[in-house]
Each structure stands twice: as C-alpha cells, then as structure tokens.
Image 1 (tube, rainbow, N blue to C red):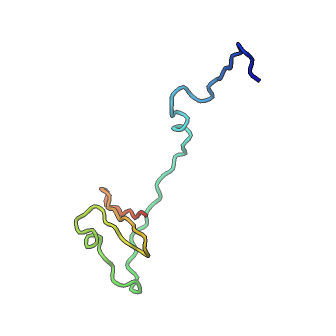
Image 2: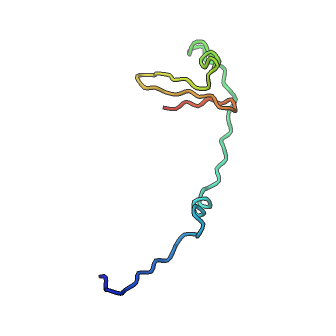
Image 3: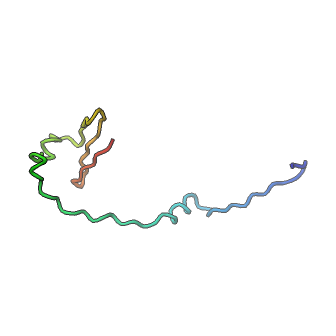
Length: 83
C-alpha cells in the first residue's frame, strides 16, 4: 500500500563498479590439452588437406545434409567448424 508522502528506499546489493560482480564470479578454466593428430583410418578414405579445401581462403561454407556449416582457419592454425 502506498501512502502520500512516503519514501521508498532501495539499497544497492552489488558492488558500485559495474560488471565487478561478473568479473569476480567467473571460474578460472584452463584450456583442455589437445591430443596429437591420429593417422587417417583407411576405412575413411583418403585424407584431404586443409589447404586443398580452403584454397587460400580463411573461411569456406560446407553443405551437409541440407545444413550449411562454416569452416574457418584461425590465425593460430586451428580449424573451427560452426553451424
């Protein structure tokens, strides 16, 4: 119920620095160790080189079962496949 002349007081519950709570609440996660590349399985057919797929581009589109995926080469030499 609100009465004329009454004052509502709100006290902050978070730090006065915006984003400070988020920065301190994030757990520290280390990157997983990568295993060395496995030799191609002969049952999979011949291995294709990323250079032959990318042909000098940093990203290409791949269609698989009606869905378009993006294959991107990073500056660190990794490949990222996204939907």
